Length: 189
Image 1 (tube, rainbow, N blue to C red):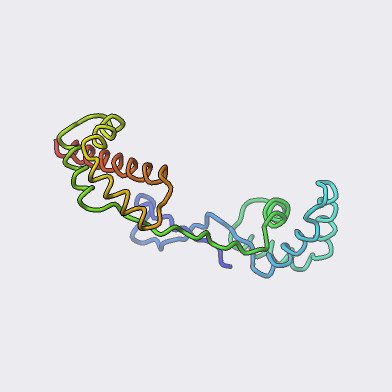
Image 2: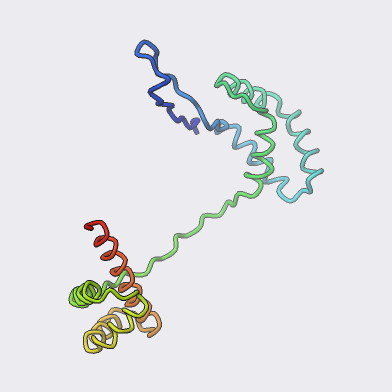
């Protein structure tokens, strides 16, 4: 794992004769060292604070070669902080709590869109009746019962069988169209 580099590109700080210098904002530990630190953290995962600290001090003494090598590497990269403190905090607060199990990604529902003719009617209604969205939606539903029945049938055929979910989908679509059209209308003014 390499250190993350963020380039400071402030033009005021640059001269044409100067070479571009890289500024490191996040100093990461070496992969080999992380592996050893991770093993230590998992062994002492459930230790109390004082026991963990004692085990840490013993581990640092037992592993002076790799600890010193990592301290030297970070010092060469111009790290200014307390390197042993950085290592301890990584072990105590990050690696100790890091889970080893892979999480399965959540299965996403298949998106079911609203029919174009309903969207067009919503747009016409919103542009002609500049009501607030809550009352506008209720009035739109009263005036377009037949169109809404067709949409409910379409959504039901596409797997959305809960009536509350269908109502929320149509209402959310109406409100999204309302805010999209109103914000577009304000930009044109």
